[in-house]
Structures are given as structure tokens and as C-alpha cells.
Figure 1: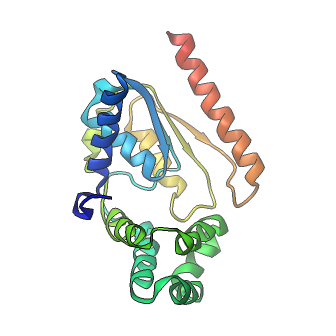
Figure 2 (figure 1 turned 90 degrees about the horizontal axis):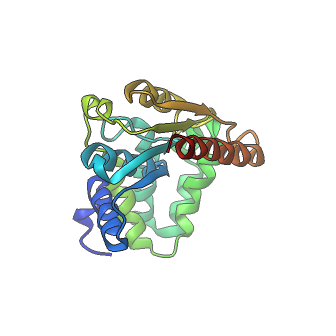
Length: 210
């Protein structure tokens, strides 16, 4: 990994544009989950000519940087930095921060705990110390300027990706469609099937529209 000071959603969006250049792709249907949604939205708003259509799944940001739902990642990063994996996980597992997430979304809580088992400890600390404080770098007016077909996918029982974020983006982006799917916390298999059905339906509509 390069200079960690360059870690940002804006930089990741430019990296995607550079990858499209490398692959010889002028424009693509672009989308992602959580951080991937923020990166995709940033590129769609800043360089719309590169994005044919947009998929924002379980968004973790709207327009504001460092939303309060990102705080658990910052706590996790500090514990990992100060205590390492084993002791950091022990302290995190008994923290009120994790308990608050667990009460809303056991799936989010399991995802947070998994960061303590990642291979590259240094890059994990840098990523989790910086990106949760960041944002897409877009105003609500910027988001409202997004003009390509857009699908927003959200679900309940989420701490990090509250369904209100998905609803707000649907209201901000002209003509955006909102699809609410079953949460992984409720039924992971149903979540996966409904998620895939939502994507397939959206892509079929794009194909039919030419």
C-alpha cells in the first residue's frame, strides 16, 4: 500500500476511473455495497460520463463525513493499534460500542469482529482510522445532480447502513428506485436471493431501455 495519507473515498473513485482507463472502458454500470456505494456515488457525481448507471447498496454515507454510525470502526482501530489483535478483540468484545451494534445488527457486529483476524494489521489500522472520518465529498446538490439510472438497495436491522440513508439517497437522486430487501440478520439466504433479484431486475430494465 502507498502513502496512507492518500486513503480517501475521493482517491478510491479516481482509482476506479484509472482502472476503467486501463481496461479501455469509456463508461460502465457502477455500484457497490457500503464503502463501495460511496465510491461509486462519488464517481457518478464527479465524472458522470464514466457511469452508465448506478447501484448504491446498503449505503453507509449520504453527504456528511464521519457519520456517527462509523464510530465503531474508529474504536476498533484504536484498540487494534494499542493492544494488537488478541487483546484488542477481547476489549472490543466486552465494549458498549460493540454491544450497541449487536443490539441492532448481529451481522454488523460479526463483521466488525472479523477485522481483528485480517492478515495485514498495519493496513487495517490505517484504513479504519481514516475512511470512517471521511465522506463522499459531495453536497446534497451534487448528489441531486446525478442523472443516470440509479438503484438504491437498503434493509432494516442495520447499524452501519441504516435504511434511512438509502431512503435519503432515493429522495435526493432524481428518478432513483429504492428496493428494500430482507436483512442478513433476519435471513441471510433470503437477503442474498432478494439482493440478486433486485440487481437482475434493474439490469434487465437497463437492457430493455437500450
